[in-house]
Length: 269
Image (cartoon, rainbow, N blue to C red):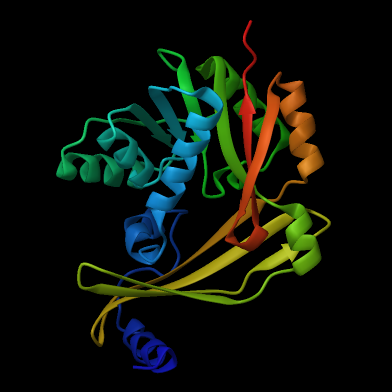
């Protein structure tokens, strides 16, 4: 079936649908997160982190994933024998991550916590913050508090591996409408986005319209708008320096350059 006809059909059904169209950030989007992003290769990202950690640390045992979402990164590393912790501000995400970890029989520590204030009971070898999570910190103070807190949660010589939405990319290339399809456990999804980028405020606005369906039956229909802060590379360099990190390397750019990825190190005293 053509996407346009599916959208028309389920939109017509939506007039009879009793659920609300607008919800709080990640409440419904989180519920369908794994379905919406089922085409993404999360293992590839996990291997990327693992290879970077091995390259710059040699040996590592403990990992904290900030903004852990539904826990794919945690599960990957737990299966490899690492001690893994994850934190997220979304109750929905934390519940889903715990359920997934339990279903696959891995031991992970998943907590509902704020990255800017979470105090680890022990220092970690590696702290990760991926998939654009940094962009959800909108204020300078929030970002700096997070970096300083991450510094405190790392052991001496530990690595901070993170990515961020690139201001340089969006300023040069702008944004385009997108359609993302997903399929998982008998359900299908279509996410339509008409993003906007404001180079003056440096914010990327992502309005998502999502339909969830099985065959021709509408299961859910909802909208969410996500707002991400973009960062200049020079801004990140300055922030790392202020928070006493040393920049190790730019590893690569994800999603065709939209996200820049950095490895930083806590110095050894």
